[in-house]
Image (spheres, rainbow, N blue to C red):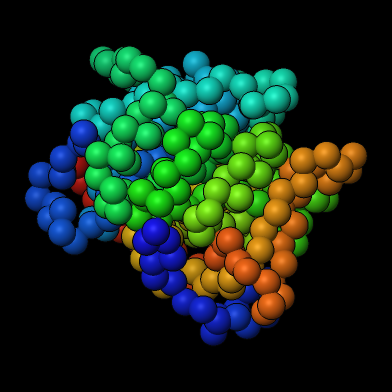
Length: 340
């Protein structure tokens, strides 16, 4: 299957103690980068993840698909187009997907990400529109055309991925790797049990975790340690229009439930960074099952680290935060140098 590339097994400190695609950008060597397809719901931290992908020499962003989540589908798609254009990814195709979860009513987190989904950031209206067709079809066709070559990354609710697997179960064997920002082995951010992306469509998440691949789960256990501190934001202020028009105004109105300090965690960036440098995170094999019917625990990622289990996931349990921000700020610096 090719799942489970890179990373460390044990040895770093974390909350558990010690344990048809867009071609390469100019000047980038495809042999030195990992090709990804990003399924997302921009969203402030999704926007910051796209900006990181634009500047990282280790990432080749082949396509963006959108799903309803942080805000409705029309806004997540418009935001993906605007952010991609702003950071120099005008040729990366953006394809809209599902407007609601598989079984549950549509919802959003506008109270966290602002009415537009990008906090206080106001970007130019892009000259292009989304691709025709549906994200599910694009995900299947793109990965089927290059089996074993594309890493699929999901930073929003898993509706598109779950339905793609229902339509084409072989997708699980065609990807190079599969990474999500979602879930947690220890806590929630919607309630005590569930993280938002899983809680938003637990039925889809259950399909994903039972698909027969190894899910690389970058959850709250590590993403809450990737905080945009005052010192980090000061460094962003030197990044020209990238800092002044996107990064800082977006973060300034990011009302993350785990932040009362003005230093919010940048959850979704973690998923893309984990591909650019697999050593940033430490992983522990686990069996993850998604609760779909609990009155108080719907959306919980029930995580079993027992040595005797057959794992279906590698769960990030520690982060090298200094290395994380070194990579992120270097990538942002590359974008800033290009766009001014």
